[in-house]
Length: 430
Picture 1 (tube, rainbow, N blue to C red):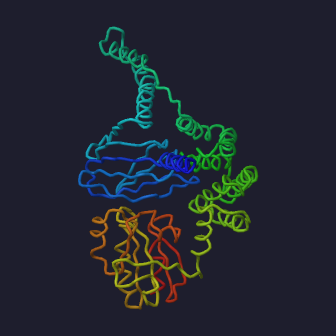
Picture 2: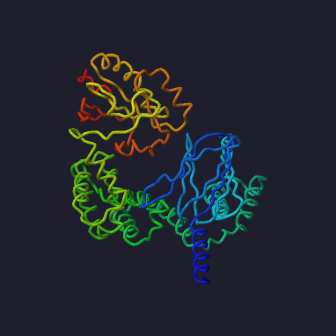
Picture 3: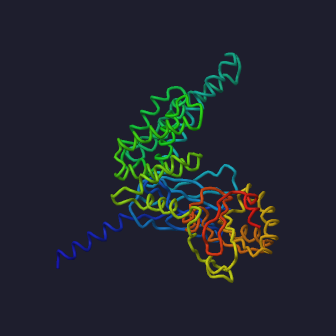
């Protein structure tokens, strides 16, 4: 019995340690949504959508042990903090343009104190000292500058003993230096970024450095490429070497694959992206969830394939498949997207004839603010849908939407006929 009680107490201690509380107070953001995200395998993952109360306060308990960056996405903008598996408590005011944060204690207060002094050092070196050269020793302002320099000289950077946070700070500095180095000594920047990608532990993923380091590595590989074909060849060769050295079947190798496939696709290197999709598809090892999702999207969302079904809330239709039309145009857009707002009048004009020909539009909004969504859609007679999750919407992820607006034309059997970004591309369907 004593052993059982001991084990029970031990398990409770472990469980309590493996979760921590977040308490936030955001003035000027009452009764509004907050998307809380963490990094997993180098990609941001939504863990909870919470609502602030009428004072802008929210509380949430992270259900797992986690050290890394936490993102708080608001209906407009957002911010990030560092988690070290300890409680986080903060206040901020959206009505204040400076948006200063007040932390009760913890690692974020240490970081804030550290960065405040670091910024003062930069002010001293980059502004005050050069500025002093423009004044003579007889000028009062000259002595005011010297007094401020003297004050800053007496400040010491707080000691950061937490190794994860030390890594975060050092990598921020190094990443900035690597981006500059890539313009002056590409080979060295490529070598340094590759070294991190091969040798750093999971802090690289959890603190959001995977994609930036891959970006430096790819950029540094371009050399003097004078055409897209030459650039594709150089990038492909560099990535092949990286994946071979990291061993593509390992978690880090799969994380890199998960990052480069959409990165290449989004930058116009579609054939190169397809090459790595094919490589990942034939891997026999157990794949990470992120890589598996990417492969499913790449396989399912293409011309000739049947579009995935999804539920339509607050509509007379239960689902996409329940909409019986000769053709359907899926429009992924958002009220916060300038390109979408410019495009929607043309979509509205297109809809008049499209509807007469037996077509229907299902507009999927990536909005997060319900009031803004309702205001933006009140004049549209087609089927409107949103789950107020922005890019974290399951529908958006299932369709692999990387930009707005994105439009997908379906036939009466829900097979994909065409994928585009402007309604003018679909005029021949009327």
